[in-house]
Image (cartoon, rainbow, N blue to C red; front, side, top):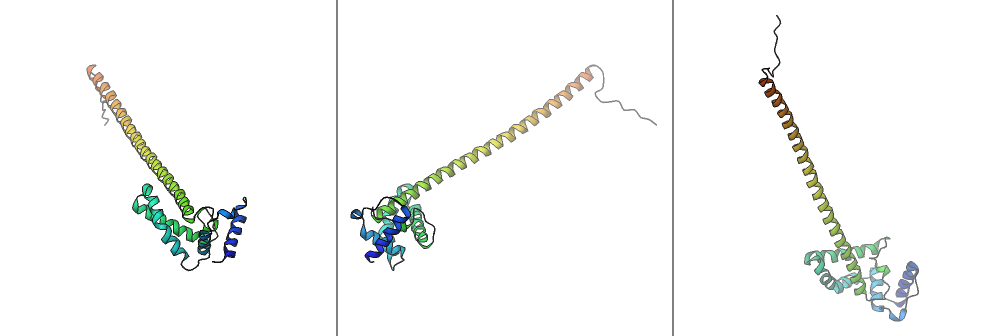
Length: 184
């Protein structure tokens, strides 16, 4: 990796950011060279990046995600990182945005922590949504039961009214049944 490639990487970053000048005395040049090599798909650059950072990133993710999910999350992050390098979509997970102000491992760690925060927010939102759906289902069931109870009370009231009329008619010597007249 030549020095000009690192300068080109920084110039590109400066144009994208349109921020204050980069303090070159504090840059992590070896990490910048490594990031530029990954951006250029140089032989072995991605394998080295993953080999050096996958283990520590998985360990950092384990407390929040658990072992299996931590592995999945970190590997997805590397897949997304490489994919963002190969297309024109630019986001926070893009090695073209690495400026060398921190070590590359710190930069990756920060991106992972952001991803974990998003995952946690999604889990909370999903749990809240599931809770709302369960409450909605319970409310619907309660409304159905209330409707059935009202219908039952209404039928009982009608039956009671008919029974009362029948009892009153029998007490007065009247038939509750209408008289049938046969016409010939």
